[in-house]
Length: 383
Ligand SMILES: Cc1cc2nc3c(=O)[nH]c(=O)nc-3n(C[C@H](O)[C@H](O)[C@H](O)COP(=O)(O)O)c2cc1C
Image (cartoon, rainbow, N blue to C red):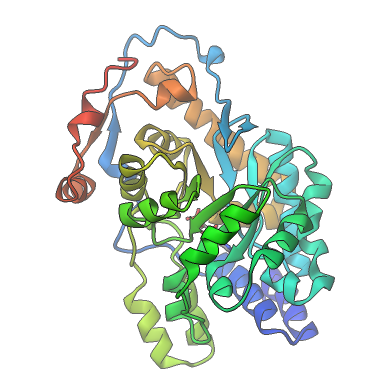
């Protein structure tokens, strides 16, 4: 048994709580198995910048500063929601939050349902505000819980727990449908979201977890007053894959086979950003398979305000602590700055206006959906 399994094993034995055990399984599987999409990519490979041989800027005058929901970020990057609930998770949350504070970027915690069910676990989440007093922090709960009875009170508790600047409600119908003990109940979610928008003092972010948000869904969300979506697209971590491994471990052949069939389900991240940005004025966080500063730059040029990264930060956080996470993120930031230099973008708002060539499957999809690719290719900014 390696270190991860040994640490997690002790925790599973120490509690008899379904949500708690599931969260431990998720962390352990994400750290030990290949849970990436296999036959589908984010679509970022179909997107090309046009090189600018005369950028007319100096590398060190490039500013990555931006804002999200009115909050300033030093770079357009969010550490995406992952964890909380256990001792291991608390350590990971602490490490990620220290990195977010140091870099002046945002961070989401994992679903806080486990701490609403067992308030003694709240500190595994609240640690993030303790070590990151100034960071943009995002609380997190699942939409299915709102269909099953959660309301404004639970949302407020989650926000207060980490003194959050925003609340993300995650939409994960795929995961709930392919999980042996899932709760695929989404009736009434839209009206619950409507209530939360009206009642909460912090903005709501509606977030997918790896299957993307379509234009149609984004339009419905904008109509009820949502201001920001995390499109959580396909091409990075596959939650069907995670549930496939859980089903295998519990010898549930039926759910292993169902989860395997849907391993690659979803709207690729680059496509989802275009779908949402073409049809709405929503602020967009582009998460799902963002693995480099080049991906971050493409997401922003396609219409996102910032990009989210989850799985690639998990192992550095666990094995190397704050330094490991900072090494990874500083590399992403340097890569982003390099792209901006090569397209002559001095600021994030410049980057949003540079021309892009979109080809391959991404182009096919967008054309069929009536999105004009010329409007990306013929932008005149910075070339
Ligand atoms: C271990 C792990 C746990 C996660 N838990 C949550 C969660 O509780 N709530 C949520 O909204 N998203 C959760 N996610 C989804 C991520 O926030 C993100 O949307 C998804 O993993 C895609 O990003 P990636 O390809 O960079 O991993 C989790 C991801 C990982 C890897």
